[in-house]
Length: 235
Image 1 (spheres, rainbow, N blue to C red):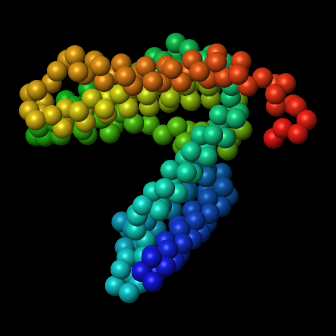
Image 2 (image 1 turned 135 degrees about the vertical axis):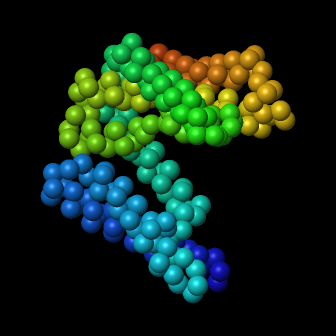
């Protein structure tokens, strides 16, 4: 019974969130504003930290960020990114080249070091400042893709530049996050930073994404040939 009650509460909570998101999306569409802003605003207003905190059933808050909600959110982001990938080939993505790499790199380096300096000025210790600065480096490819798709600009040169920079930003942000987490988990904290270990962590992350890029651009097109997909009876 407890599992069934939890399932029903989750379904009702998701239904309320979807209804609010759709309602605000329609409102922003009529105002000729990006729909994603309306959906974000709906989440902020109806979410568990605002009006959602007042929706109580049997003494429990109905709208909660539980594991099911997190999984659904991650699935939604994956679908958005997958649809963006269908609109752009790896070669088109690489056309952004140096410009995307420069913008993406600056999008990590500048917020990280600026945040590190500012929060230390406000009295935070080095590790706390590093964690907050790392959070500032993150971007949202899903939001960028949704806005570009809404305005029909997903195949434009500007879109390639924005998405390319966002991808570089996220890759570097993951590398920075892995380093900061390893420092936080170290017995000596910031005082026990090992440059060689930090370098290895960064190279591991960059190496993984480089391998995925090589596979997508050079290996997969040779493995999955157009003739294979056009064969009679194939899916």
